[in-house]
Image (cartoon, rainbow, N blue to C red):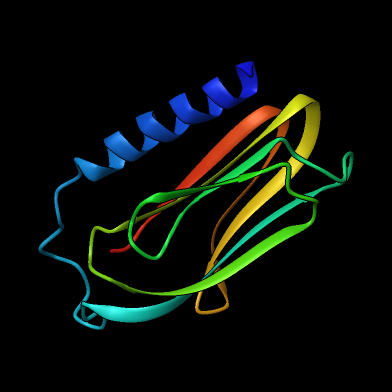
Length: 127
């Protein structure tokens, strides 16, 4: 239960921080929005074959909780995004594990991090 509370707190803090960012008017002209993208979330581990929770930003902008997923876990979805939109991916486990989480947009890795802990989260913002 502590892990779920930590995961929820991390997600709320990270989502709040990035939702308050200002849009950069100097962004490159090659990025036109809105645009439709393919998003893939990946959670893998070298030390466990399951997590207690995986949470990701879904097609409607809300969070989807996946309780007790088998690892490796992969979710692919299609979404229309605007500049400043944020993607989040997080996990929780009952014990310290080595877990890698990754966000891909149109088959390109845009954010990836490995954690050795009971929880972790990453955020990607469209520019």
